[in-house]
Length: 381
Image (cartoon, rainbow, N blue to C red; front, side, top):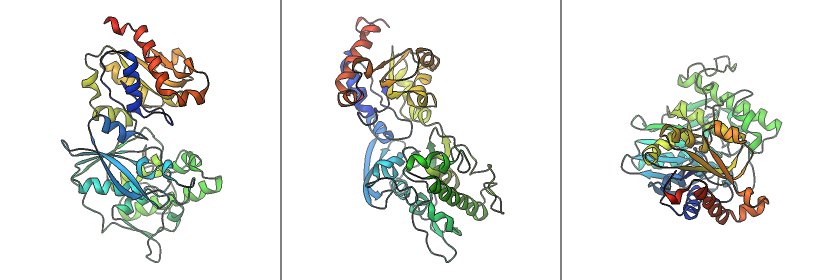
């Protein structure tokens, strides 16, 4: 059992438990995530410990947030959405002022806790600040022309003149991995502000403000911190170097800060997390893998969790089926992605609201259908 969450209805662990209950055969439950919402929950369900602290939310208020901790190999899994996600906004979107500061606080706590590897899951972000808040929480000072610390948010970056890293900790003994399937650069028509700003409530004018701030961040970081080619000294944006790297635009540009200041490696989210959770070892010898997510649609084909699970299962030689709330993919599209069949809640209950309200019992009924279709109780695949 390797499902992602059914957003707004069930966590990945709850999906796995419900399907297990309906199957009536021995299973291994391995809830997964792709770096976005639910990544910490998935790690905890697979044996990591949960560490909860109070951090700065995206609107500046204090919020409780967790990361996952594995003492055996000193690995921390930090989920940006836990501290800096849209769900942490108490009064709606704040596209110009939302900050990633809390994510930096989670990282700092994990490092003090002894982390030698930090996996940073990027997704569900409320901010478009280029990771400036994250860097500030770790000790960077972002200063204007008068030497004053910048306020939070992406709009303020337009006044950035200097980045002071004298208070930044020595992180040379910590390996940082960004788990993200977003390949957008920081700037330009495919960048953080243009593509994802509107999803966070940014108007067209807001997008221009945020793009200007992110451009300034890249320019100052290039001039003062040796980030090769991100923006030339004449402040003309060129899609190259760190700002143009695939993934630099993830989570409102937090990917850029992770590359620039944490020297992180960006890895495909679901692939890396499946390895971290030991999926290959669990799949070896399995007769069936069941994956899924709330909606199996075109977005799923762009590296979302079920497709990553299907690819990993194929490497182990195990057939895959999926459960979902609804699906818009054809049988041919599913098979091309390595999924033999998909079972949707809407097959049993066409009303979406009732599907969400009764997702648990409906999943158990779908699981019974899977068990019958695949003759699981009879011991033959």
